[in-house]
Image 1 (cartoon, one colour):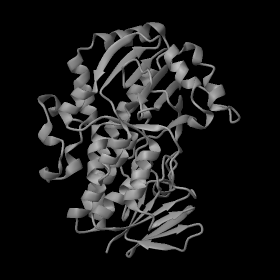
Image 2 (tube, one colour; image 1 turned 30 degrees about the vertical axis):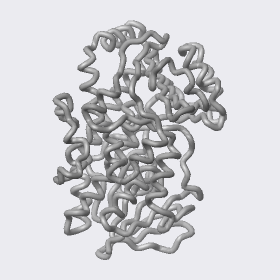
Image 3 (tube, helix red, strand yellow; image 1 turned 120 degrees about the vertical axis):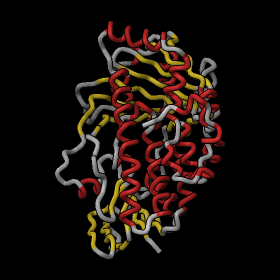
Image 4 (cartoon, rainbow, N blue to C red; image 1 turned 120 degrees about the horizontal axis):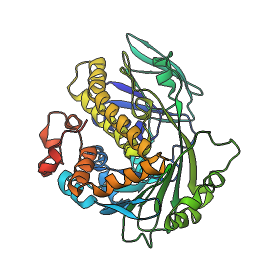
Length: 406
């Protein structure tokens, strides 16, 4: 039986483990932390992510414990409504919901799906060797492990990527600080909305219902200088609170310190080649992207589904891995570019350019907004391979969903 070694037990790594197990492979997962549980915060899962999770068998769990987004708004920084978003129309076009869910819910569902057998915790990978027999993986505290293939799903600072591409420069700062938090019991009054996005001068804010009681929020702020090492997330964010809408400020104020996080966003140039031989990359290790398209987790889960499917029809490990990369590189490169464009829109500081941006959004026809949302959220054709019976959203497409995506 073919054995896959997966480095990283985050959402991408566990999704890969589930998909490869579904394809009949034996999977061993290596995670450097002693506890595989994810921190709080939340994820926005567009229909393409939900379709991929349905392939992995956990979509219903996420639906039951997350929040369905049916209506939302885009607002100026001062709270003035620019555009309504009807998520229910996106669902009508694509056959899947848009869902916000706390990260531990999704991560826990994947852990349960994969199981603890074959999960190696506290295993810091120190290197690997490839040969005719496959891959030998070395991890601190573990005996050398042999496998037929290796998947690096170990994040933006991936050790596997570094070994594959030793001349590549390290990730670089984007000049954006990302604050994320969960306001417990903050969902009582969301102005009748399930999600709200604010566009201000040099910042973008967002919030979404994550379950019946909690609200996930984020603040993306243009910043030339990285945060000081000793600065607390709350202390750094408080410099900007006065510029934010009153409702958003209330959510920040009722967020506990342990439910608040600050990240200095990093980016890397896309790779034209992810792997070689029996080794490949997945998720942020392969295509780190800014969070401004809401597709980071979705693309990692899509990667996993396509990787698993590639093994169902391939006669060799290398053929399966190169097929997977050929299908995923163009798609993820397009989403990475989209995320960067969106980040620029939210980082505009000049008042006249901000006004022009807001007026374009306000004047945009609702059908155009819907088409853009459908294009982002449609599962790509290659997600399902050639088997139409396994494409749950295709039979429910409308004319709006025929626009090609990436």
